[in-house]
Amino acid sequence: MASGDAVEKKTETEAALEELKTALGGSNYEMIKSATEKVATVSQALGAALYAAGASADGEANSADDGVEDAEVIEEEKV
Image (cartoon, rainbow, N blue to C red; front, side, top):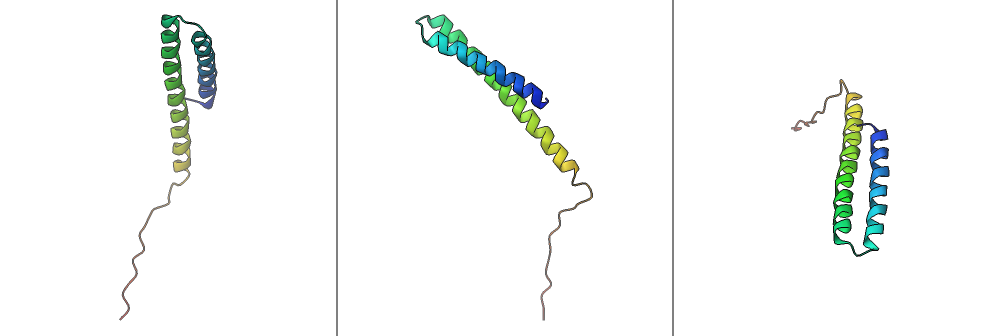
């Protein structure tokens, strides 16, 4: 996912949170339950979008290291 997807998911999450705040102001159990479930669903989608954006950024960083090998330096014993 692109970072634009993460921004879109953030907007959806903020809207769901506002809906939950409104529901919490009342006493309708079903409305509160529904809004809580919506917040959970959209926040998970936001987390997935951020994770995917981070993973693709890591992949780009790793591809820049082509040709570089990790090696262990072993010192010889001096007699």
